[in-house]
Image 1 (spheres, one colour):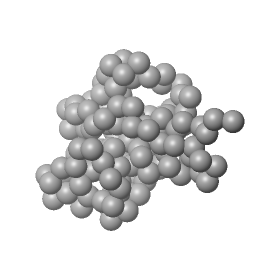
Image 2: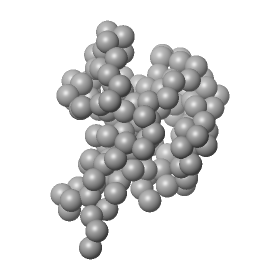
Image 3: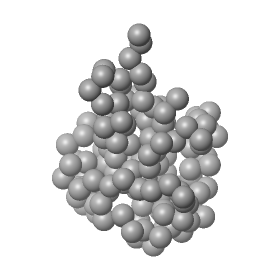
Image 4: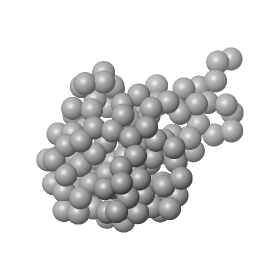
Length: 133
């Protein structure tokens, strides 16, 4: 199984808050932390210390707000759009990164954990489902 986790946050979010939400995401949705291949977010969170510490040693793939804003998500937010320039960060970034991982061979990106909200942080998970052979 291949998972992608999208993360959105306020500036200055703590690593403890991010870790707590990621733990909850995995626990409540029965996801394997070791299956996460990519963490993704909006580009202006590329250097956010709390996120980077929580996902270390993994890296964070980021996208411009305008790119995320065109991704269809189940839980868009006007408030997030005002703050981040996109209707979604966690779900949109996860879906976009998973679609990139899926590639042109027909694999699908399926949202398996919709946006969850923690203390100044949001997260969502997408599974890359391979094409049956």
